[in-house]
Length: 116
Length: 116
Image (cartoon, rainbow over all chains, first blue to last red; front, side, top):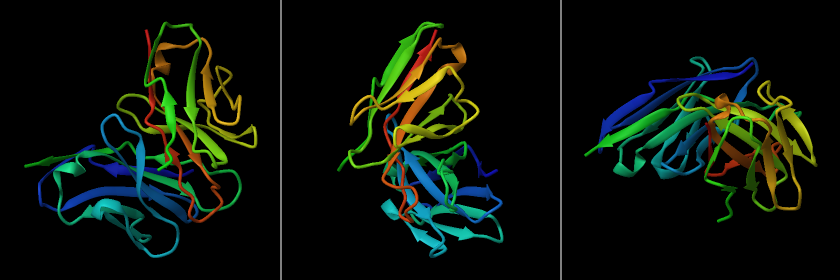
């Protein structure tokens, strides 16, 4: 079975500071990994994804994440936080094998607040 | 930009009643999904649907639940005899073809179901 753990349900940073949101995964096979963002009263929007290509993945809005197999991690970073980054962030995993097992398994989410 | 839409945004129902949550996936997508998020908990997979049949379902998706694609555009989740613990945010998602390496699930804004 696959799972993800997001460390820290709430992260608070100052505007302009580094954003680091942590995600560790558990999977018996190499996974595909995703970060989604949810702004208030909106759906889940894909920020970036890892699909076995480059281990450093760049996404929208200046976010990036690095797949580290040795650490089973896929942490999300952004060099400089902006007020508009305040949202809830979800890490998710799915199998990269064939078949019908395309469901996403999500972490509990991390609420990011950005202070002026 | 095409998007997944869901109606209603908020549904209040009494325990024991039946509810139907509606979703309009992106028009050329082939796979459809329902997820739910109970307040304070993880987003959980419920069911995936392809070619007019369920392709995968979770343990949560028991006989109380059913899905249907009644026409070429809508995708519905029916919950029979609702219970208090069915109160959650329900997300619909769709994807073009999960087997492609550029696979992505697009999420709707969610329907908040409150069972009283």
